[in-house]
Figure 1 (tube, rainbow, N blue to C red):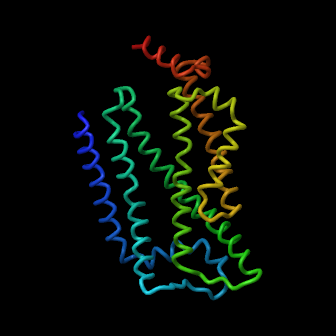
Figure 2 (cartoon, rainbow, N blue to C red; figure 1 turned 45 degrees about the vertical axis):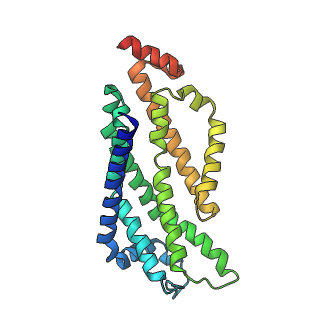
Figure 3 (cartoon, rainbow, N blue to C red; figure 1 turned 135 degrees about the vertical axis):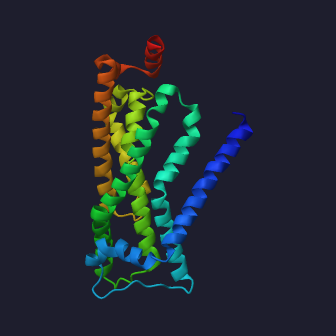
Length: 256
């Protein structure tokens, strides 16, 4: 398509995304008190006894409810968001590549929600327990609603995105954009890069959160490589593990 047609298509899909998220946010806005209670449930046990959420400004209540409703609106619309993004790039894919679109969208949605569930069930309590422990040794912790909820939402989104790593590694490997031998041979550098990423993206500067995210990303990395190795060997044989992108393209041309 010409450039302006691409821009029109992009505008159409962005409009769908924005309208969907806003509509979902408006629906859940009135349920935000219940949703906030659900969000706080993992950390209630580590909060100071008798503590309650504190709002420090007149507009704070509306601001918090707006952010929480927008957050849950985006969660509800995650399948739509991913599908619209994939749909925009769909015309650029070949016929053989398009068969991967639906499984990819399903895997992305499942991994995103799995990451959020893991964060909710495991990370939140451990991270906030450590952070609050640092305060209570010398001061009284005031549970600032906006501060706490913002960190919790960022953690949820961060782990949801981090759980996309298997898909990235899988496609880079099976399409030989980065050969499997490179991923396996340069594992020391990759481990260090993943550690640096975890240190940068964790919003609470907590070593507990960073270590948990790093452990998860290492596990996902190794699992995704194992799956990619199995698929490559099943599709093209063991020698394909050492192919470059050029060798893969030549092999596909010969098959065609």
